[in-house]
Every structure is written in structure tokens, then in C-alpha cells.
Image 1 (tube, rainbow, N blue to C red):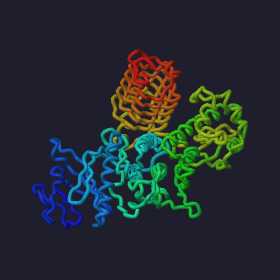
Image 2 (cartoon, rainbow, N blue to C red; image 1 turned 180 degrees about the vertical axis):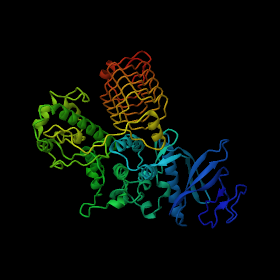
Image 3 (cartoon, rainbow, N blue to C red; image 1 turned 90 degrees about the horizontal axis):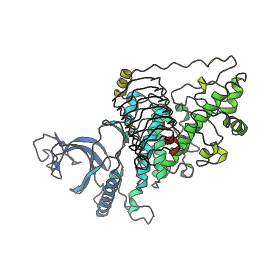
Image 4 (tube, helix red, strand yellow; image 1 turned 135 degrees about the horizontal axis):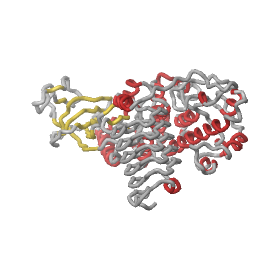
Length: 558
């Protein structure tokens, strides 16, 4: 079938063998090469079509976006053309990123403008939530670890996306990586008032585009900034956690803030990060994607510290009532990985900022194995002031804290154990979250599971040889003695993971995050660590050779 792109056509569907529309007489083959198969979506200022490129032998699928000015005013047409060219140039520059669709072509035809981009096959995150249900906290953190570097790159190109939402984030079918689509400007309304403005903002960024509920106030007031995208990412996180759109949650009439807290079950530390992402005032919101990444890293570190303090103090505090311990350290007791039950501990919402004596007495002598060996202050000071360094949030205490009789709190369900077949079957059905699973000695050799969430999973002696784990979350996972020979761990998160005696010969660790990972006796001979986040001290504990590619790109040398 050939589809007519004339917006006035009464019957746009045509047989394959015709060259002009049988209903309106419009030419069907755009630029004498793009055959339109059907419409994917439309709005007041344009439409998006699925097409094939007939000039290439394989006839690949493409996406054609059509911008049609809403007025016959020549000034409006001139403005539309200027914006169109600028958008094409921007997409051409941004499109070199592997997680942004490439711009293939752009042209003008019959006073309408067309952008041709690569087609991304897969489900968007809105579809994923509808199919599989809301994400866990760990799943959303994995999502942020994928999206924020993309956003950081886009902002570095001086581009504001302005329409980040679940429907514009596709999980690519071929490699399961997240792809950010639809940069929005091709469907902007052309406003001649803005065109004549002497504002320092360019016309390209000055239009009120975006999706209601996801776009912050300054964007709807036609003053978007980079932090506007941060707000939209925050709303997207809330949707992923709750399955509810912002319109269903409502707005606080006094502050204008989205009332989202009662819809989600997350650790207090992560809640604080989301709260700052969703600040109505740009002044108080995170200004960049890197600031959010830093905050998430700090939250993970404090969580590790708190767990270590509790575990180390269990022997000395078994006679202390649960309530008194909770009121001293707990702000809000939720499951730190998401999908947990609320604690019934009293005073769980009290934030104690006055327990510096507890911190100072508990850190120096009793550190968790997952904690780095450097002084505490060296990790906090570079991120935030001392006044907020003691603001601890404790997660997973519902199964760590014990009462006077020493029994664990009731109500926790034992997680089902996954074997290799069950895990891969669930993965193929769209599940990505396998955080905290018991997977000792599992055999996933040569499996294709990019983007999988194995946060805090037990993977001791697991066989992961030649497995595709690119972009995976293996933070705090126990991978001691695991076989990771020739495994693809590109862009994977391995922060605080235990890789003691793991076999990583020939593994691809390009761009991987290995901050504070235990590499004692790990075999990294022939591994590729180009641009990986790892220190010389860590690598000194591992086995390397002249074939090992160091983060600098040099073989065998730092």
C-alpha cells in the first residue's frame, strides 16, 4: 500500500502500483524515493509516517516527519523554513550518538517540510509499563543510568529536547538499549510574534512545546532551559514507578508541585533525588544530568554506609528497643530496591540531622566491606555541604533490624529462585529487573541480556562467558570467582561489585563504571578498559598484562 501525505486528502490509502493518489492526485513517492506505508501519528502542525527507501536495495524502513505551516502568511512560511533547516542541522549534529535516531535526509516539497530519520524497532517505556507493570526502584535507577548520559551529550550540543516522556523512549529490539526519539521542533507552532522578538533566546528554543504534566512551568511559558529536561525525566521516573500519569496524581494548589509521594514505594534517599528533579523553581532544581548522576552515586554510597553501620552495630545493640534505634537513624523505612512494604516502625518519617556523634563513632572503626577505604569526608565534600552530609536514609531495615527477642520482622516473602532457563524466558518476555536474586553458579554463557538489572544479585561462580551484559546494572553484585571471559560489559554499572578472583580475560569493559568495585585477584589480562571508571589502586590488586587496554587507551600502561 502507498499512503498519501496530503493533509486534505479524503482517502489517502492507495494500491502499490500507482504513482499518484487516486483521491486527490498528489504524487505518492516523496522525493522520488520514499514510499509512504502509513501514518504513525499526527498533531496540529504535522504528522509522522512509516516509509521505505526505494533507492536502497534492502529497502529499509524509515520515519518521515512532515511539518506543514498552519498559515499562508509568507512570513510564517519563511519562519517555518528557517526553523526546519535549523532543526535538521541540530539533528544531524546530535544524531551521531548511538542512542539517538540518525538523520538520513531532509527536504522541502509542495511547501511542506520533511525530515527522514532511521526507524527504531522496539517498545517504548509507556508500552513496557502497560505490559509488565511499574518498575522497581532499582529498575528506575538503571533507567536513569542509561538516559542521563544521553541527555548529558545532547545538552553538550546546546540542544534542549523539551519532550522527554515514556512514549519517546524506545527499548531498541536489537540490543535492548534505550533510544531517545522525537526532538519535537518539527511539530512546533510557528509564531510570528516570537520571530520578531529581540530576546536573547533563539526562535528555535522559544516555542512552548512539550507534553502537559511532563513539561515544567518555565517551558510552558516559552523559556526552556537545560533543567527543563531534568524535570521531564523526573516525571518519567514517577510514571515508571507508579504506572500513573501526572494528570492522575494532581498538583498541590499552594506550591504547584506534583503530588507524587503517596503513589510510590522507594527509599528516602532516592525520594530526595526525585524531589529535587521535580522542583517547580529552576533555581532549586538540578541544573544538569551530571548533577543527578552525582546525587545518585552519593545516595548509593550512603545506603552502603548505613547498611554497614547497622550490620556492625547489631552485636552491640541487640538489647536496644527497635523504636529507639529507628528514631535515631531512620527517616522513612521502605524497601531500597522498590516494590517493598512500608514499615510499621514508629517515628519512621522523622529526619534526624543531629546524630553526628553516632556517625563519627560508628564509621571509623566499623566499615562495611562494600565501603571504600578512603576517609568519609573525601567522598562527601565534593558533592554537597557538611550540613547535609549527615542526612542518612536507611533502606532494607525491615529485614536487617531485629526486635528485643532477636527475631526478624515478619511479612517478607522469599523471592523465587531463577534458573537460567526461567531467567532467559522472563527476559524475552520483557522483564529486566532481577535485582537481589540468588543466582549462584548459574550458567548464562553466550546469553544476550543487555540492559539487565542484576543489582545486588548473588552471582558467585556464575558462568557468564561471552555473555552480552552491555549496559547492565551489576552494582553491588557478588561476582566472586565468576567466569566473565570475553563478556561484553560495555557501559555496564559495576559500582561496589565484588569481582574477587573473577575471570575477566578478554572482557569488553569500555565505559564501564567500576567505582569502588573489589578487583582483588581478578584476571583482567587482555580486557578492554578504555574510558572505564576505575582507579590505579583498584587495578593494582588485579592481574593485567601488556594486552590489557587501560582507561587511557594505552595497552599495559595507565
